[in-house]
Amino acid sequence: MVRDLLIATRNRKKKAELQEILAGWQVNLVSLDELEGMPEVDEDGTTFAANALKKARTMAELSGMITLADDSGLMVDALGGAPGIFSARFAGPECRDADNNAKLLDLMHEVPEAERTARFVCVIAVAIPGGEAQTVQGICEGTIITRPRGQKGFGYDPLFIPAGFTSTFAELGEDIKNRISHRGRALQAAKPLLQRLLNTEG
Image 1 (cartoon, rainbow, N blue to C red):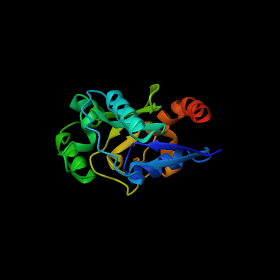
Image 2 (image 1 turned 180 degrees about the vertical axis):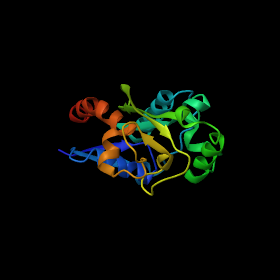
Image 3 (image 1 turned 45 degrees about the vertical axis):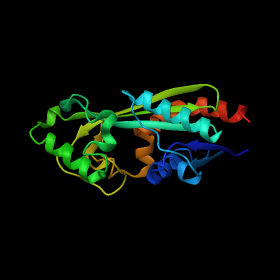
């Protein structure tokens, strides 16, 4: 039986990525745009896990649906872990992906190749209305290049080459990216939890 799963995002690219990763599952993904009156959640936590849990619990209570939320970002060693939880708004509250990428490149313009290590981190939280909430994490190590490459993906994908590859996330096909990405790894870790909750909750 196909079960509904609310994903706490309005990002269509993120929904498409999740649909690709969850292909074959008996799950119908519902985004916040498909429900009326769903508010924005202030992501004021100090960690990816805190933000993911807050979004999942809030939307589960408001919707009455099992809810999956994620918080993810890029952590660059040369920048002390920045942009981290501020990845989506690194260049300002109304910034675009291109603005974030430009700021990152500007801050790293003197960083040598050997010191451009970074990782994408994704924490996924799954919450039941009035019940439990749990988190899992996925990490993808890599490096930051000096100029954008590729037209696929979103966010910092044109600047990030995952470890063991020579192409950026924005150059890799979806099949490869979804298998090795931080979000793909987090979803694989969440699979047993999702299967249990979606099979047992009415």
